[in-house]
Amino acid sequence: MTHTHPHRPTRPLTAPTALRRALPVAAALLLVAAGATTATATTAGPLPVTDPAPAAGGAAPVGSWLELTVTPSAGRSGGPRGALLLCDPPQGHSRAAEACAQLAAAHGDVRAVPRRDAVCPLVYAPVAVRAHGQWDGRPVDYRETFANRCELEAATGAVFALDD
Image 1: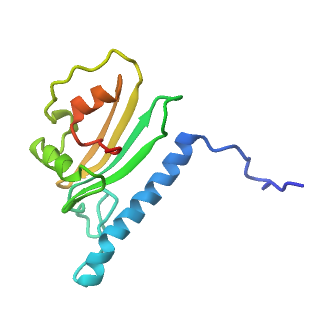
Image 2: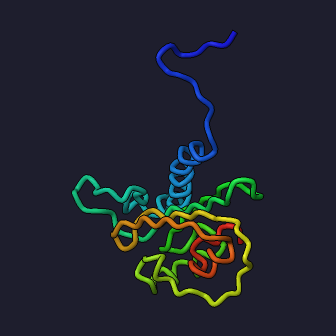
Image 3: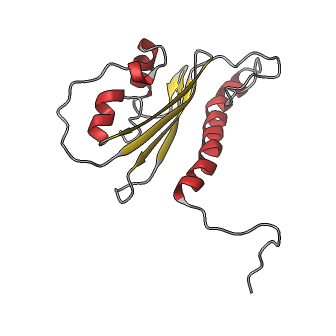
């Protein structure tokens, strides 16, 4: 016999719902892991803040970080991927230093990352991406869907290079 809560309907989790619920937890764990060595080495300050909302003192936290998600079209190999890109020091994926340098040159604007010349195949395999966080204390929320991974890499450089 299965028991359900009388006030809470049950429904299966979809992949996007599960990802939305899991991503903040994964991001927080990454920040704790990244800050744990700093926190144990010096007791001078708190761990990095993960919310771009103003802190208790009213000032927004300083720093550059982005929660990155890459979602291939349904039916493609591999599911949604995510990472927390930190830029001081660069970490979060294998090309974090390159991604941080490209974003620094573009003042944190993913759309301003210089486009790389590429001859991409005319294959429609859409890839949706999102970068959400802050750059030098300013909020960032970038969303785009590209025709395929080649177009994504040509337009955004190393920013969404989560598979490398």
